[in-house]
Image (cartoon, rainbow, N blue to C red; front, side, top):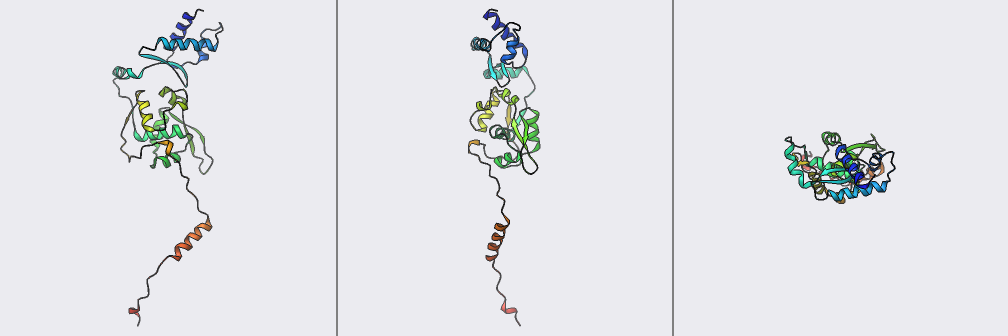
Length: 235
């Protein structure tokens, strides 16, 4: 097959698929005619160049290759859908940022970093959106669930891997997600400090030994003072 025709086939498949396609899936379009990975990648690169000055762009994300609208087109496309997009609170954003950059983490880890209790509704919201999932359990009392991000999270941000996330700052994550048409609002709960995860350490409480507790009690007792006897009450 001529290259021009092959590029048309790949282009049509990507536009009509409704989901991202991998190189292997694109190779299957030409079965039984053998097509190498390099050939498909070359066609994809040429397609990217052809669409460079248009409202759509061809990008590689975690799930494969797909066409998507450019960020500059977002405000126009919003007029096609009268329904408001879901709005997410600052608490949801901070929780997602911690999971994304510190994963795998437990709910207790998140609370230690944010300094406030993480409600079950926040975790449920992120799970229902398909952005986080339980990826294991930590050894210890209660075996708490370990949370991590999903491939859907990367796809929604237009990323191929976690190392493409913006710098460790929840504000930059918010900007990246807003470019994908997601909205955030101020939370009504007590605001925690802005999460800058490159400066955060989770402190693990130290459990005092019985000997140290005894020494502490003894030291405390030696410092206690008692009122002097009142001689005026003596007969």
